[in-house]
Length: 211
Ligand SMILES: O=C(O)CCC(=O)C(=O)O
Ligand SMILES: [Fe+2]
Image (cartoon, rainbow, N blue to C red; front, top):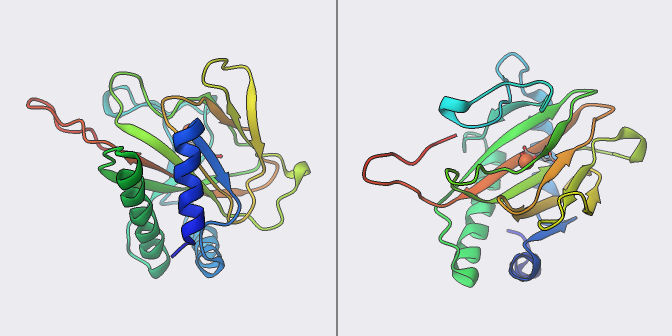
């Protein structure tokens, strides 16, 4: 399990400003295993990522060019990854009373040239995504490789507040409805795990939307 100090740092930063990027949160052995899994994902079974949910779901290559595969606890590495996220969920609920209900995550692969336009991870009014997470799984990623994750201010959507290379083990977490963000065009294959802690929006007439 990750160090207590990292958990405290995440809780502190989410409380204070709503986002946090850590370079070492997961054990390096786990990162190595996840990198190997990401590399061996079969492009045939990965889906072209879309934007929006169910009825308004669209696949727009202009907005988003990654391919994804949803994560299940079906290998030792994904099981351990989800266990760490569960610890984080419980800690966030305990310290910040967020009422996070569950966590969904997918591997993402951006091939050379792929990007994701500036967006919010949740759709005002209907989404139940509260906190977004991204874990980067790339060896030796440097500035010429592009693919930066760029985070913008919640008040001024043109003001950049953070820019990060998708380096091995780096972990970003931010409020899904507050911070616009984007992925700049990658100059080589870029792997990550993107995920969302969700609250439960089930009502009497409508089941909580899923994925
Ligand atoms: O990979 C990243 O840096 C961000 C991905 C993202 O914004 C998303 O999948 O919604
Ligand atoms: Fe996003």
